[in-house]
Figure 1: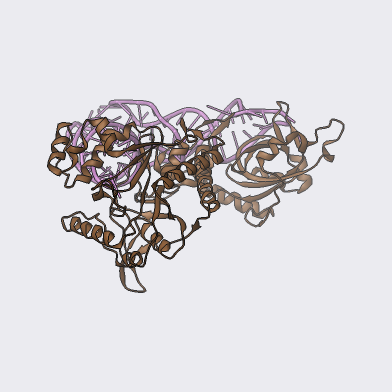
Figure 2: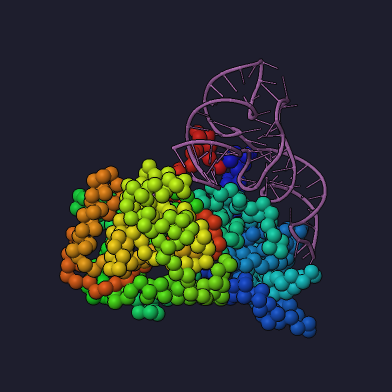
Length: 510
RNA sequence: GAGACGUUAGCUCAGCGGUAGAGCAACGCCCUUUUAAGGCGUGGGCCCUGGGUUCGAAUCCCAGACGUCUCACCA
């Protein structure tokens, strides 16, 4: 903020002085980097050619660049640490040597700040204390940091100071990435996980597709959509809340295996496990049944865990083993004592709910009650990977009826560590059944449930043209990353979570 | 939406009725193998905003903003 000369001003002055010395940090376009810092450190002895008899001048010169993260100036010499984001390596400078390279280089070096990007060339060596280091014979400023970066001090992986304010870490994620190794790890892990998911489906012959984000009716899930305006057609449109219906229309087009990884938007609350915009994976396979989908989920988790972490056993979960399979109604009975017979009509169901001490005011249908009981009594116990099978028809408007169990569908959800991680079913391919389900949903909607599924004639027309029996499944990518990395907050997984605007009161900025 | 907590220097924090503090960062000087480098010196604050209580408020009270956590909502 306001100092006698603000840091920003001082740095602008230094920038000008660097330019006056002929070393404009913003003028360079390209800088040769021979090795990453990690590679330098891991292969140090080989690269350094540490043989005693050879004079330093004759040793191989390495070109390296990175961000200055620490500096120790000692008169006519200096040490600094340089980070390429992944690792940091120490660099050593001497006045006389730099001046040999460029008479202004030492002067320029003294104008550098922590946060600047710089390039160097020189041999590798080890300091008295044995730290692998780079002996810089040249210096090329590559960018100037005009702000004081909140870089803490670091020693042996331990960190002092740095940026910890959660708000600031989210608002200025680049600072988080520079400062906190965990933030960087999270980003890398997410990226790797998504890549592995793609690789998994690609290898199995699924086609990756992309379907519209802007839709006339947002269907495929129960959620309130975001609204926006489509200027070219002067139409009110909605942002999608799921991928489902368009993907099934592709199945109707005789593309038998498709998947999509895409952002969906649900205009609802925020918590450490919910975010209005999130990334959804859905895949559909023609001629596949529920059991096939379960196997596929098992394979997917095992594959990703092994590829990313080298071991199917992560976060105290063994994804190498098959998942448990439990029937929903049986599980409720076992955990709550409420029998399936008590859950065959709404009155008895409410009475049973009361008996176990749950509120009944908000319940209007049997399916809702059943899912509430599942959530309350069963979910917390589903620590090991478990498929819960057989969901009520009222809450499953896109899932095939179970021919053997009236009122229930061929649907399962997967749970790990007490949390829902996937949702799958045998897709309805009977267009008459599907139309009836939509009509039921319209009934719910007219009763005030604004999350009930809208009618979708285009989708029905596709079904009426014939869809093979199909299995489909959805997984929230953000929650998947949370699960695999042990993150406690969805917002750590999202790079740039929505934040209310920062208030700037009426006084001068930094 | 409810409750609890937080907001003080660029960063991390202390101060909790009596002139606004520390470490790091910054600025100046010294120092050619340091590493949380060191030594000497110097600056830097609408103490989130607005009201109130008080002789006096960063500190107590009320309201608001923003954030964090928990709960609710989100099948």
